[in-house]
Image 1 (cartoon, rainbow, N blue to C red):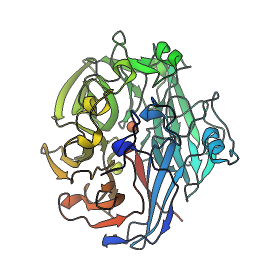
Image 2 (cartoon, helix red, strand yellow):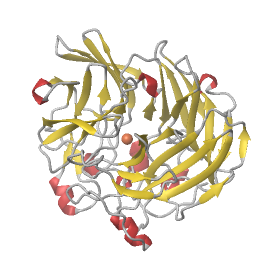
Image 3 (tube, rainbow, N blue to C red):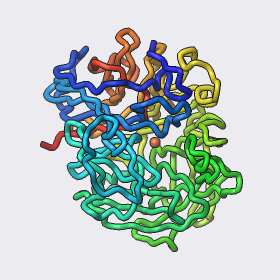
Length: 461
Ligand SMILES: [Fe+2]
């Protein structure tokens, strides 16, 4: 059972940890594959203070958790708050300083990636990433050597053929979205400002060989919520038209083709690819969220949009109706036809996030994070790995085996709570034996609250 707080949002599995921990030579059950040399990193909100009883789960101070694997050993575990000016002040430390965008300094809490030798904690809606050291200490805000004009975003897509990062940034102070391309040396080489109405939230994008896929969906900046200063200043907007855009990779704003959609919401793309004249986008789709600025309004399903470019139409089909989130693929297949995907099952988000909803610990075993899914989209099947009660799992990240030829030849890594110890394990599964015994389980010295996204950062040194 997780420790609980009385906080409206940060309770049960979301209860923050209160200490930074450094531990070496972690105990392991099984055998860590010797080829896994690098760090498994994950970011998530972990507020330093719960004084604000309505603090939104998206607004907690970011904390990055990392495990370093080397030569079959789990060399260390570290968790570190991202030192924004606010966090540094609370910790009584000098703020490292750096290039903040438009005063939007925020302890990036949503994703962590490695790109061009930088470890980057990421968040959306205006702030820039925070760069971290290999050991997860904060270096400072990052504008990619002065090449990033505005803020950045939580989710980017790495083109496996070119090593370039593609992303769509947004900010309430802009009348456009901004496509940002970062090359493999870590410099911004291209931006395109795409005009939009009403300051939509854009959490993710998609990439094909020809296009950057842009989501313009009906969650928009909400001035009334912003003025009240509670929660997230974005809400469902009935008047905002739902559409998906295709920006040709080398095109400008005038080249974007838009396609109408039924009202819906997407946090996360699984993958996308070109199929002749069509573009296929697979994503976790909600019928509606953020009524009144809260996460409520319906369960997400894994859907496929087939965009018929010449006909100007989108056809929707359902790949899986089980509620799920945090979809991931083998990143060697981003933007390309692919077969496998991985996700976390989720319970009833309405219940889990409703004001006055049930104690999260009273929910059943089907609740958020208690199962992992492997999809085989070629034959339309899935394998579900059920976990014990209270063994909630985070985002599953696929890591290819060394020299892997097959798409699912590799490992799936996820932090999983171990209720017997009241602490987290790093579970390493064989992707080809998804429901079998884990290849290895690394026993971490502390709990890891449910959080957001992460990456495998292979060693390059
Ligand atoms: Fe996300």
